[in-house]
Length: 282
Image (cartoon, rainbow, N blue to C red; front, top):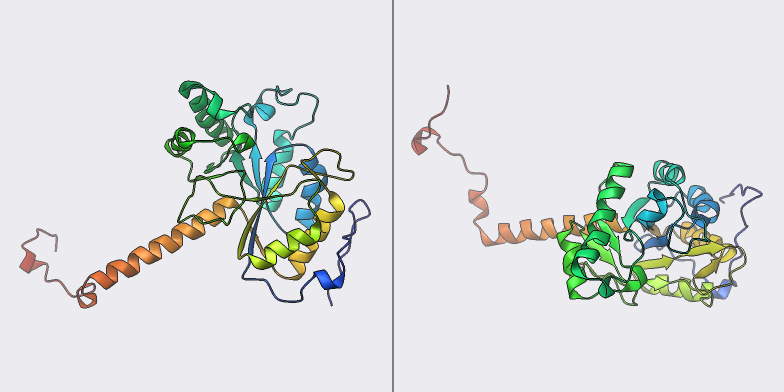
């Protein structure tokens, strides 16, 4: 039996009734926790639980909220600072993703302005944190073909949208769907969804003790969700890890196809260097 020491400041998970839970091992299931905007509640309420369960997140940052002091986007709210983000990177291996410079509606901007929002945010984040940024998250889920092409040309390898569906990088890497946790979302619904899907990308904004607006979700439910996933060995990865796993699978398929299309006996045959008349040193 596993006993967890729960610090006093952290909520104790309140799980749904036994009938709503399964007892199966779900280690073949993968969940990505994708957190948008970078509100300070990430450090206050999400980070302690990540440490408890040794889990990680993809954190989509509005670059201007870090580098330009008081942000123009929701200026009354408090956002993460550089020190707090670095601490979470070092402790939990969180992934930094770009959420533009100012959280702009990209399809409403001219091409030059949209390009600056997309490319400059990547450059600034990479300079600030010394790590490659390969994931982009569309503000408001606002995108079209022009925006997706700019995201690709800026050097991002994948992008997350705001729409329902099953993630499939073979079909579309630049509009990855998600399941959003909103104030009305019930914990059993989330658990049921994860059980039925091998890969789930969960979108979160603010995890708070008393949700009041539609983008907030209760700390107690979030703690219970992580506790359930931990107990059932659900694999929690970042979006960039999901991409790298897909890329390795792509390479393996290409290698198998290449081998099938050629004569395997010729792959490792001996070559007489002299017979090729290739100059070489003795």
